[in-house]
Length: 358
Image (cartoon, rainbow, N blue to C red; front, side, top):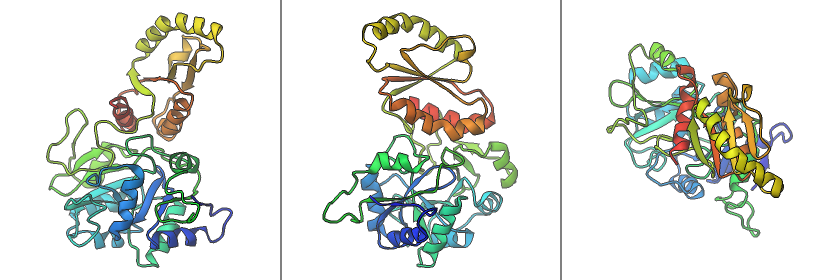
């Protein structure tokens, strides 16, 4: 593993771009989460992503491009609704699924005849994609930089935790299957991009993110359908992060109402108190992640307590980092207060419901 920091190394971007040009793996920052990248036009390089993550080869990746013009190299058609969405939200946290050019990025698309494309809005990612374009690399395939199904990383340190030993070879520290990390600081958004399928006529929301349905429909100029985890569209193309179980820590995630959390703690706290007094060094068994519980329920020494932010934007920004923090304590379960209803919380609710399905 090699760490590259543009703030400290003037040639970090050039090193990172050359790493991709050589066919190696590079974790890169975006405004949503860190991605595990390889050049999208090299099937052998893309195969290294699937191997490193333990991801099924038929589960497609998102290809990151520097601009709309570069995106056109990967498509056989760019439907008008996709063009309207791209012009409204690129660069930004939106992925559009469109018909794929049959000669482009087959491995990155998981063998499908569609492809997911995104232009990220992160200064380091944009510099990297521009440097790649100068090397005739017009797209970087990059799912989230974590083991398949686990919590997405929002900081370079999270990527290091996931892949420090990946491809480790003392005789060849720069082996192509080793993960290099380009540090761009904490991610601004904190959850993955919104995904809209534009390949089949009427657009369909496959994964919510920061962008709300109202914003998407206004930009699209037409209504969107929504393929939800509990009622998925059976004809939708496969897409990143849309499996029922995903984004999961090692601990079991349980979604509860505020009242259910309070009642649950009332039941287990006597046992936890006795355990804490008898063996104070034993790790807690439960973590609680709540917006409102603490107003009427005291914190307990046998429980890991962490407050969920009360606004949706901050909650999305903090979500994966907070789940990692709680998971690192070794608890068996993480009890999470269910997010409130409302479109601003759709992305957070989606990630937590998939984490709880694991």
